[in-house]
Image 1 (cartoon, rainbow, N blue to C red):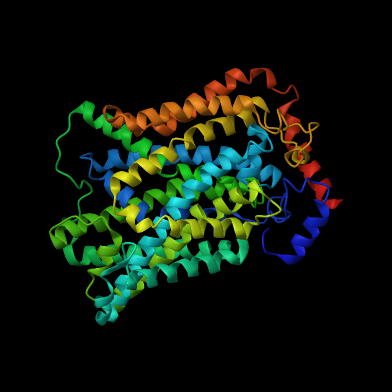
Image 2: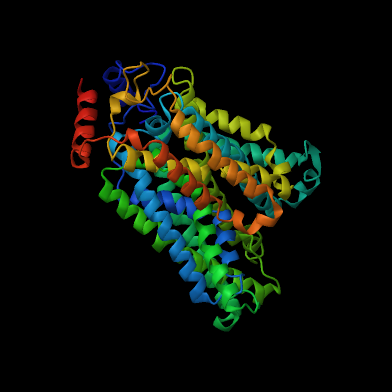
Length: 502
């Protein structure tokens, strides 16, 4: 595990026989698979309990559907995410390696840089946006207690005010400090961040109900009148949007499942962290959003704005600081750890886990995310383009592991850069995986850019995953290994343990 000297030293010796072009202490099979179900549960709590998660959950109740219909959509969507998370988790937990390394099995030892860089670039943009949102929350806290700082809120340089730069810098440094201390520090942080948000959310919901009474809470936040067909379509769309929202963290879930004690613990953590947690969070969210409509005369879907309207200054400060903590949590989980491993995979000896994460952090500043966030059309197309790759990558990754390789992993070959390696393919690239990726991505991009297909774009993840999986299964059918699946787990674990013991 990154940033632990004794483990790193032992791992360096154990994996000295691996190619330095493919391995460093952070990418090598981990020896510390000690994450329990609660750590996985906390991971999903940090992912769900964000400003984005709040807005998404609240938006589903504005579709004009009955509350039971919305909750059914949320449950269906999150159960799909849960199933997919269990599938993605298995290969990384078996081999003890991150997402970028597992991709070598399908794309080749060097071809894996393609999916790694794509996922890293997606995190690039979102890291900056989430940091900017947290900086805005911090600015509200400062202005609440030091009104004289208002003079520093005028746009000053590159579209951001002096106070904005100060807050952005503070949030940037705080996140870097947590990340710099490695995965153990990140694990401890998310164990606290997720539950802390629940305390604030429940308290805020209680305050709303106290002010408005239960009569002021409605679980249908819109007065639309929909036909049976329109209701069905909205329900299907809402279900798809739940999956799309979690598609990024879902793709690189292996970065965290590699530390799981076993698959039983991971499945338990996914069960509590996804269906149970997401539904409870959604109900609390709609109580708050619905209450704002009764209390303030308008529906407020921004949690920062809602918290700032509470009368008590101390309560506002605590609420906003907790929201900041939650944002730091999801940013580190979804947008810091992923590019850290992804960029490290491109050049293991030159880019460490820390360096890879800092590349994303610095790049997020260069993107000036506040300008992206202020241009919805630009960010929509930018993230849609990047997101069009997620479904196909997911489809190829799972098809290769479960259908082509039949659940088998040769850990040593993941770090073998010679033609004798099982994942060498052609010069380190698997042309079949790349051949399945390109047309699938192209179709998703076409859907994203054609206005008349806007409604279909909500299903681009499913379309991309299905097309890529089907295409890859067809063109790689001759590569299917003949060994029995029942021997795969014992072999890979024995191989990994032998590598560590040597």
